[in-house]
Image (tube, rainbow, N blue to C red; front, top):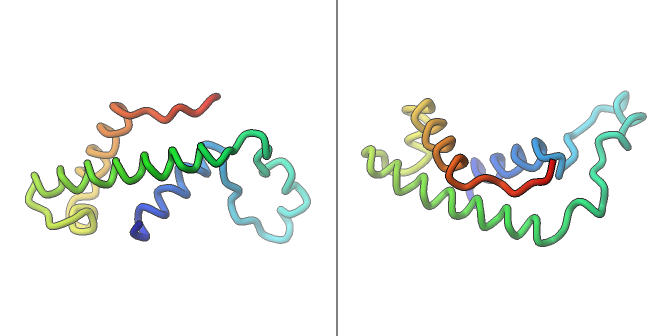
Length: 100
C-alpha cells in the first residue's frame, strides 16, 4: 500500500472515530474523550477497510489511465480536482457501512 493510500486510510479512520489523532501534552488530560471504545473496532472492520481501499485504488488507477495519467500520483499532482471527483464517485457507489 503506498503512502498516499495509507494516509487516506488514516483519514477515513479518523473521520469515523476508529483512530485517535496525535495529541500534544496539554490535550492528554482529555485523551479519554478521543479514545475509541474497544467494543466498536473489530478486526473485521480493519480487514474491510483494507479491502475497500485496495478496491478503490484499483478503480482509481484504471480511471486515471483512462484519462491519460500513468498512475494515481501523476493524476493527483496534475489534476487534484479530477482525483477528488473520481474519489467521490467511488464513495457514492461504495458507501462505508459505519454505524452513526
